[in-house]
Length: 276
Length: 363
Image (cartoon, chains in turn purple, green):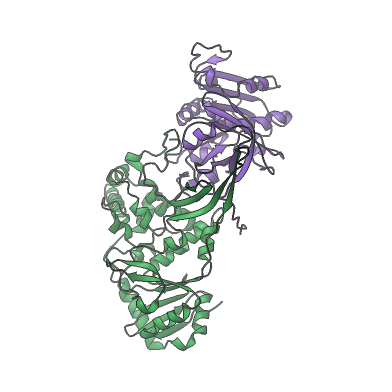
């Protein structure tokens, strides 16, 4: 039996090394950890501000034996609103990492297609980073990232840098240029899929975005002949504990915090409410 | 393997035995209060307290192991007066471990403790707060000779008599208790206080067998729990039942709070003063409209039509898949609690009726 950890529900306070607004309502944080988390891509941490509360936030940096932790926080609720005001040198509470995340071994030698809608790019970045870092281990990489307007684009500069690496194609989209300068494409993330040079037998797709996006992207991928066990989706749920007990993130017999938040589509598509 | 022993104790010896145990243990037993409510109560003065073994305690033992609000940790805010800089820290806060004897526990409630053990001590991370309270607990259970009006533990296979889980199980034989020892601590207890017990003879065993047999014939409810699990597994439950019952739910959470096996919780911060506060977990209910609502407003559950789905499916389908048995223990408390009639018996009757009609229609 697993030894008991009395501190699993008690956060550790961590210093913010760097804080910067990425858009009008998303703030990027780089934290320095007392010791490496040893996280896997796709995992998340519970982030706290004492007196305000706690919420699950995806880790957006790649794995590795480093003391760096990067988070991108959108202002959505009472906690994330307060997080927007934190500066370099301030502290936030961290518990985790939680969830199963991605196994890099699954991606070895495969072509990988990422489809990110809005903030969905943040968790995917934790997988994109290691794939780019170890290029020869993996096949071609295609990243389709969409957002509403150019002002809301996340990691724009980074995506342009990724695009310069060999064997990587980055398609950046906005729904609407909103009269702002824009060097990418205009349209929905579903649009480029039909025209991609893609071998469905050698490709894995990884999706993260709002629930409505999944439905339409999955239809496009199915039209290209991609089997559902080759599609990974990252599901977002309300979470309180991160250890499979509080019940909030339960999807039928699964708990999103322990069995996910990354799932193969084939393992959840038949579950009511999973893709809702 | 240790054999379970069968003993007999004079009816009048129970309180003297408890008096002995109270010297080293905290006592918790059903007590009828001045309002006429029977509740599990911490007994501080055995001589001035009347233990009520005739009524079903209105609440289960759940709050003793998983309190309605429970401090997980404290947070401390240090403000440097010179610079105004804030420094925060969290400190884990564990509950006291108090050896406790729980007396007069019915089979359903004992079974519920065994289920919550599975949730808190055997699945995923082990829960230190639950464990602190659960360690050193002794259970003296009481077999139900006469099931109460809403009881259906015969259908959930969690009563009215237990075969394991208890330390001692008492069966009322009129003028005497038939005493079975279960776990090692119970056997130890009968050895430590051997003066209160005598070995059961053939007549005692026959009387106990008779009591159990008669009890099984006294249930007023006929609830098809296994059929319900089967219909759910085969996806043969009409959506209209979930819609209908969801619309009757009044968002009070009473069913989950009174349920001995509901363990969902929320975690919130409660400021105490300028210098800090507590992080607290408190009972939550999956039927609450905001239970799955995320910051920003998205909700993966359509509250109007599906809020009660999770509650019933968890108990009758997911836990059957995971543990081989439903996590409803048939105590019937939700039946008495819900004024909208959204209870386990109603749900099971509705789906078994729909299943029968479906079968007749040749589906």
